[in-house]
Amino acid sequence: MLSFIRPYRWHFIGGLILLFFGSLTFMAFPYLAGELADVATGTSKLGMDLNQIGLILIVILLLQGVMSYLRVIWFAVVSEKGVADVRSSIYQKLIGLPVYFFERNRVGDLTSRISEDVNRLSSVFSNTLAELIRQVLILITGIVFLMVTTPRLSLTMLATFPVIVVGAMFFGRYVRNLSRSRQKSLANTNTVVEETLQNINTVKAFTNETFEYNRYKTEMGHVVKTSLQLAKYRAAFATFIIVVLFGVIFFILWYGAKMVQDHTMTIGQLVSFISYTAIIGAAIGSLGNFYTEIVTALGGTERIREILNETVEVNVPVVVNRPKVKGHIRFEDVYFEYPSRPDMPVLRGIDLDILPGQKIALVGQSGSGKSTIASLLMRLYPWQKGQITLDGIDINTMDLSAYRSVYAIVPQEVLLFGGTIRENILYGHPGASEDELMAAARTSNSLDFIQSFPDGFDTIVGERGIKLSGGQRQRIAIARAVLRNPAVLILDEATSSLDAESEKVVQEALERLLEGRTAIIIAHRLATIRNVDCIYVLEDGKIVEKGTHDQLSLHEEGLYAALAKLQFDI
Image (tube, rainbow, N blue to C red; front, side, top):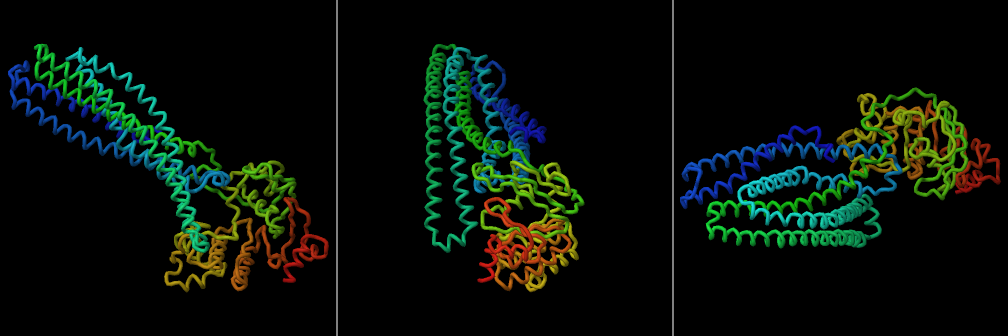
């Protein structure tokens, strides 16, 4: 994770230098405090009076203040910019990952990684790391000074270090594992919140507020349980440090007092030694806390690294150069099963030949593989066998972003972004002009209802487009597709959830959009596909019939004829 600090290394190095000199000047205080005692008792050998020592202390204090100010500012630059880069890298990685990654991972968990886990990392970059280094410098400086001035006492104190280091390693392993478990439990609580708020209408309709509350409370119980276990280990480590360290300090103080009594040490030296010992003791005690904090943050970085180590399908940012294509699509003996369900074949030997400008329809029962064909055409999943070509070129050999740029899709359930109508339409072509925007709205039969709003194109549509009706959302999606001006259009049951009046308006808009394009229409309502060039009927992942509406209707024993009879009789 330190690679994210590299661009700001000069600020980091400058902060470390100030930290080093600040720690050194700070360590002069105990020595000068001892000299004050020796001057007061007349045993000083430096030849300075109290005023001179006091002046030196004031100068050191001012230097400490300046260095501390600059150090905090520089480390803040490293922390804020470094952590911002971490967040950007995670988000950059996330949006470049394939669809099936998001099917394996819940959104709440991913949100937790980019927020909670990075927050822990932020505290390490901004404060903990600097303080850890500072305490180590103080510890080393203090030990060196004591080894020179009072070797007998310092050797007694140093004998405790191996015990403390072994204890830190033992406790640190458990703290790290528990921290990872805590972050995972915390991610689960975020998932519950995210799912509940995204489906709040369903929660209300089924009066499941209590159920969702209990679900959240249960997950929070796991967080609390893990946190308390974590606290127990941290408390045990702190107790271990206090007992071992301060037990030795009390012994050393008793031994030092005896040396003063025997006139082998001055009172000033004892004051200096006591001050240094207290500072060293505090440094060791704080090292325990900083160590557990860093180990805790490492639990979060493991979850961050899991994302950063994933293989992306698109390297963001990417410059998309849309190729000119005719729109001739072929599926040749394509077999597919979802990565999460390898034992359940979805497509079994699909053959399609869609000529440029041709409109074809895919029909069949739910689960027959219609939407899967569209997903494979968009290269959302890798297929196991067969070949898919566009204008005779294997689509797997084409640049993914460039390849997808020739398509547009109008789905059954349109989920708009929470901004304005303008932003949602421009999503199809962010650089479009105002005239192009108006033309797209007009073509999609949405201009009239947009202009009826007080704010027009700047009307906020709300989360997932909740402020618009189903027909309005559908027409916004069509306007977005118009603006994209695709070579190939995919309509995934685009009118199946609309009422009769909305369907008529949307169908008119779709017919304008379909002009001059290769189109693949997935439909349940057969009335909407009577005029397509070819209808492919799917059953259990296979194409069992194909032909025009009139041709298929003549096969009274066929699946299409049965579906048509059922729908048109109704």
